[in-house]
Structure formats: C-alpha cells, structure tokens
Length: 92
Length: 177
Image 1: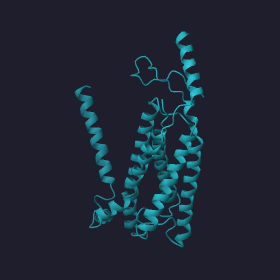
Image 2: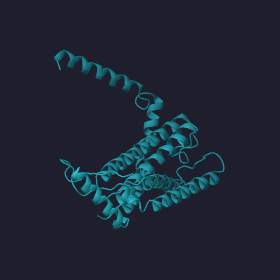
Image 3: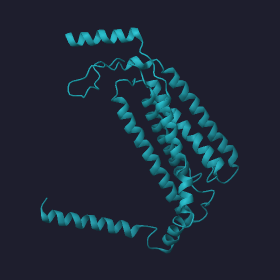
C-alpha cells in the first residue's frame, strides 16, 4: 500500500465514522441524551441481568444434551459391511 | 466404535435456540411489533421508551447471534469426529428441539416469572403467553421424537477409523447414504 492510498483510506474511514457519529441518535440531541440516561441509568445492571438470564440456561441445557446422551455400540452387521467396503477401497 | 450423538444434538439444539430467538425477535419485535424486550417495564408509549427498548432488543439479538455462532462451531467440530453419526433425523429433531427450548425458557422466565414483556403487550396477554408456551411444548415433543427416531442412524455416516492422508486421523473414507 502506498502512502497516498493509506492517507486517502484513513480519510475515508474517518469521514465514514464521523458521519455515523453525527447520525447517532443517543449522542447529541436532547432525545438522545434522555435515551442514553434511560439505558445507562440506575437499573442498567438489573435490566442487563433480566435480558441475558435465559442464555446461561440455554448453554446449560446444551451441555446436558452434549454429555448426557448414552453412547451406542456399533451394529455388528453394519460394521462388517463398512469394513468390507473399506477393504475393497484399499484394494481398488 | 461407539456412536455418540451428543455433540450433534447439542450443536443443532444451540442452532435451533438461536434461530428460534431470531424468529421471535424479527417477527414479534420488529415486523408485528407486538412487544419489545422490556416493554412491560417501559411501555412503548413514548419515543424515548421505544428507543430504550430498541437497545435491549439489540443486546438480546447480539447474544442470540453468539448462541447461533457457538452452535455452528460445535456443528463443524462434531462433523469432524469419527464417532458422531451424520443423522438427518437427529439434526432436524435437535433444531426443532432447540426452537422449543427457546420458546419454553423465554416464555417461562421472561413472560411469566420476570414479567419483563408478554407476547401481546396491550391486551389479554395470558392467552398469547400460554399459546407461546404450548408451541414450545409442541416443538420439544416433535424434536424429541425425531431425535429418538434417529437413534439407529449411526451407520449412515459410516465414519471410518482409518485416517485420510494428511487429515490428522479424523477422515472418513466412505459416505453411505
């Protein structure tokens, strides 16, 4: 990458970020300030806990399914046929 | 080698949970706009409350996305294992099971215990909440029966123990269908 393209690339990214920041509804306007104080108020951590509470339960259930299923011994006939096909492949 | 369906079931269940979460979020929060994440605590009667709810909806969707990603990674790892059968019934059943688990857990915790929102916020929400829970029970039942139906599908993947050249010993030489 040349210095010129690097400079222009940085300028482009900076311009994009600036326009996004200017459009940010919770950053500058009165409405935005009220929304931000509503989100990050005294009950932020309570709300965070309430919203995310199901996810550890999902992971626990998935872990239970992962480790809880009984392993099944192979079917002898099918295992034999697989071995025969394997042997055939090796010969071919 | 013993067949081990656990890794496939857990991966597909997490995928089902994630996809079920996206159905709930996209359909109920955004398209139908029946409720939002904290709409019982912060009713969407003002623009400020609507935007605050939008933030928490986004956080919920972010974690739903992470759950889906974990499911995808686990699925990839499961398919690289020689002892995990490639069973369509088990996979489809686990996806549906995951969706049902999402509806049940979300319905019981968020709607009934915490009461942070209800399926239909602005009326008789009990009927809607119970219907949502019933759909969870139905999906879990369907998913579980499919998983049971795929119990003996273990040979269809025919994972060979012999290593494929350069595969690190986890290759499959035959793929029966």
